[in-house]
Amino acid sequence: MQIQRCTVCNSEQVSILKAYEKHKLTKCTECSMVFAWDIPDSRELIAHYEEYGRDDYKSPITVKRYREILSKFEHARSLNRILDIGCGMGFFLEVAQELNWKTYGTEYTETAVENCRQKDITMFKGDLSEINFGELTFDVITCIEVIEHIQDLHSFISGIKKILRPGGLLYLTTPNIRSLNSRMLKEDWNVLCYPEHLSYFSKKSLNKLLESNSFEKLFLVSDGVSPERLLTSIKRKTVDHSTSENKDEKLRIQLEKNSFLKTVKRMVNGLLNTLNLGESLKGLYRFTHDDRILP
Ligand SMILES: [Zn+2]
Image (cartoon, rainbow, N blue to C red; front, top):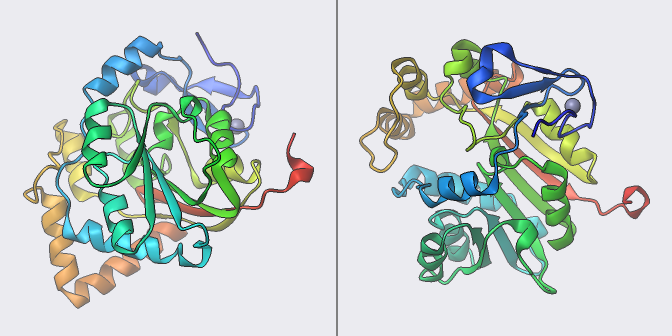
């Protein structure tokens, strides 16, 4: 089945991206959203996610970044509950537990759910729309590299609004379709992948989706550049994230150790953000729960 309207702004001003045919992409000229025009059938998706493996190496630098992200949620701590949608191996929530959050997660497969339960994370299995949370609500909901997998974006965000308390925070990260790598590599950008990824955001389209759903932006940045992703995309190889042996990780360790390089990295990220060219979009939004604009 072909989607005829923009999945963010509902405009009919959409056109198929001819150079991206193998990824089945359409672009909205109104809000710049890029999305898969074909809806994969659920059997295709389930088969895909049974095979889906998350990184199983918990990098110390990633843990440090997680602590920095979590520090931005402190002002919203009231119920003391945080939910990570598509929590993978539960690494982010493990760091949240160190900070005394009550942790909740969702995942698709029994293996992932069981693995996270072993870590004392309260787990829900399946799609957000199918899960019964009862009366549970959260101070913070995080979606780290998740929303690009979603096609029906407004119902996904509606699901979040039902369980996020008024004034609660939503933190999202997703690849930036306007990034330097995306622009240089075009259809060879190794983030592009049907049916795994169905929605590709720019700052503009992500902000539009959230602001039209009663979320107020606290920040939205595009930062990070992955030199190895660029190289491997050119070579058409996949990066193994499971050990610290990949070149990006080595580079990250070098950057952490050297204060001059850290300053350079901060400047590069600042420049990428100013130019909207960073590899990843990272946004923090507050749910304003404005009943006047709810249906
Ligand atoms: Zn649009």
